Image (cartoon, rainbow over all chains, first blue to last red):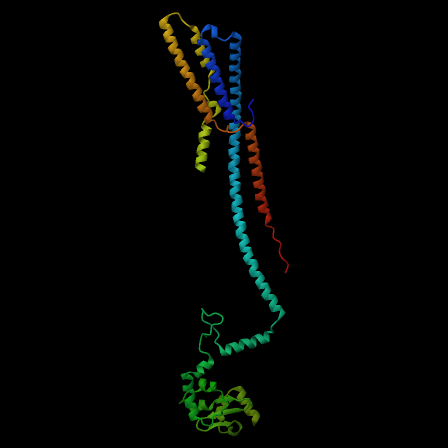
Length: 255
Length: 115
């Protein structure tokens, strides 16, 4: 009935137009003068047309009702599509995020693998590592300031050498050197510094031993300088009691 | 936009084909009958013609209101064939989107690289 490509609304409106036209024709026909009147046959045709148009109108209306139902379905579908669209978008966003995170992780992991491979290529023995650590801790302090970074020349604390160069270090050196002219030049200044300030009792001062590279033990006695152990054995009996195990053993060896 | 849409659907759902008030044929019949009566009494004739003109006006109004109501009917922007086609397109769209979603959901199977 309805030509395709024409919307149902257009069809309905055109039918209404047709009905209006036919009705007008019929009403005019009733008013017009007798000779101009349509024949009965024509009149019947017109009436027939009006009735078919009316029937057509009703059937198209029925179709419109069906279409209204379909329209409801379509709207539900549209809403569903919209929801899926949102889901897809959200998922895409999440995937993108995950991709970024993974890319970063992979980059970092690759770097780590590279450094592992580099380490495997040139292994460092643990002995050497410990030695190196010793060297570092000898010339530098152990703990760096929080803001310290690689290449920073600053040291967290004065190093041992810096300490010795300082005023305090020299102060403790001076009087000892003056009092003990015979002090062995090979004795490390460390011992003097950590050891004995001026004015300590002679017993503890006599208790001072110093290692030499030769392995000989020397004992410094105030006023007399350092003397070899074996020569003074009898005189310093009390000293031997208080001395360490190693010194006593070495002294007994020398007897 | 969404609220506008829902408002529109609400307005549409309020008006269906069953609510239509389009009965034209009885009016036409009435008019023709009253014209053809053609009474002999002049006062009656004047009254009758006034009545008829009133009925014609009514018919005109009825036709206009029919047009207005038709314009308000929901879901008849397309012919039925077109509408069904569009429905099918929407269904297809929905299916594709569902498939895409499923694809996304099942995509994340990672292969653990062997070091």
